[in-house]
Amino acid sequence: MEELLSTFVRSIFVENMVFAYYLGMCSYLAVSKNVKTALGLGLAVTFVLFCTLPINYMLENYVLKEGALAWMGEQYQSVDLSFLSLIIFVAVIASFVQLVEMVVEKFAPALYSSLGIFLPLIAVNCAILGGSLFMQQKEFANVGVATVYGLGSGIGWLLAIVGIAAIREKLAYSDVPKPLKGLGITFIITGLMGIGFMCFSGLNI
Image (cartoon, rainbow, N blue to C red; front, side):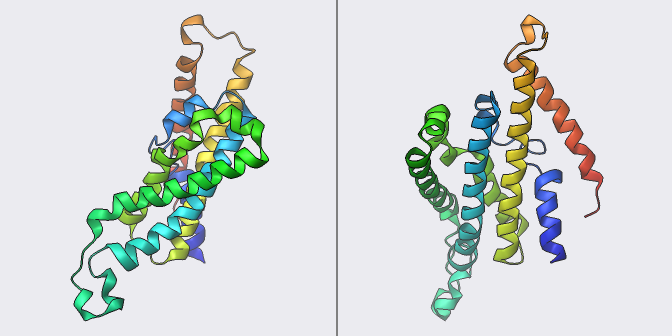
């Protein structure tokens, strides 16, 4: 239980996908002009991360990596399919993104319209693929830890995009110097938020 809690907190604050690794920045910058749209995309990213991390974990540990197919018999102990991991991970992510796109189009057409091309582009969002690649690197003990990591990473990305969207809505009524309006001031604020999140890196969780 302690490991699950530690992984969850670290993935949100200490290893935030946006502020620690600057992953998923294209969607983060493009869809953060208002809170409602940012919240919708953030929830979609969280859902995809939460669903794909455990599936990719099981594929990695029971199918892809060297010796993973030992459960099928001794003759498969030396099989190594790790060269397929990137393709398989992207395929799983794309499948869930397609599911999310259909659900959003059916039940929230206004949100679907406002997200535009950035909803299907979740399939190539580097924050989501990064979650699966970090899962490979960290070698989690079990699928439960991988699931919690996926959920925490999604929530961290959601907090980042909703936070910057709220700030950008306020900036619309602020006296920002003309050369910095738009992406200029957004980059500056993102850097400051990243510095703020660095405070969590000292936590011994």
